[in-house]
Amino acid sequence: MTDKAKSIDESINKLETYIDKNRKSAKSLLLYLFYFTTIVISFIIALYFYISPTNLIPNATIYGLFALYIIVFGVLISIYRFHLNEIARTEHYKMGFMRIRIAANNVDNKGFGSEVRIALTKDAFAYTPATLLSSSKDKKIDSPLSGYPTSDISTAIINKLFEKIEIKEKKFLKK
Image (cartoon, rainbow, N blue to C red; front, side):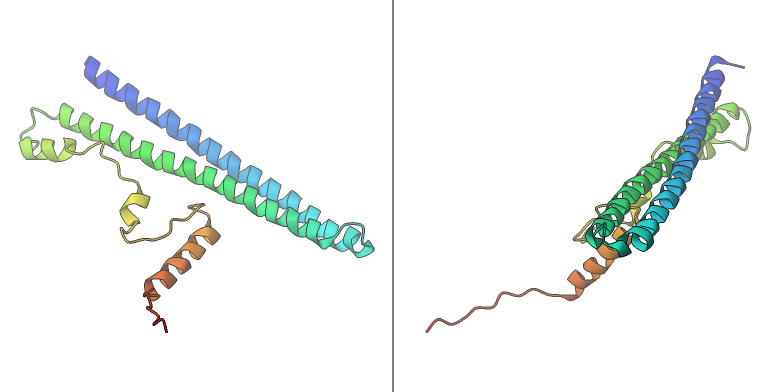
């Protein structure tokens, strides 16, 4: 095996370990999120049904805890989405190295002419995230917590409203 082939294989192996590391982090993050959700919901239920009827804790405190939970949930989901984006990007680079390896190993084959090698190697590492592909240029508002369903849905509704509403300047006559 040549040194170039070894370096490509080593790069593929390093990318695979990075992908595995991100997958483990994403799985553990989801597990922690499940535990956190279970604990917080049971705590809020306990506060609402057992302590609140005796008027020891006001309802505003319970609603505040629930709002705090929603914020923490949104941040954890955005971190989970970061891990998914890292996995997708690294998988793309891994496939690029595999394409380069296929083109390099089949130089002498008749079927691997210049067109096939060019097709395999051209833009092998060009990565465009899905968020850049799907975003339109006339979009007015971006989601503050992209990947969080409530934020994405509310942003889409607001953007639809802005598309339908046309703001015009009215000139008033002064008497």
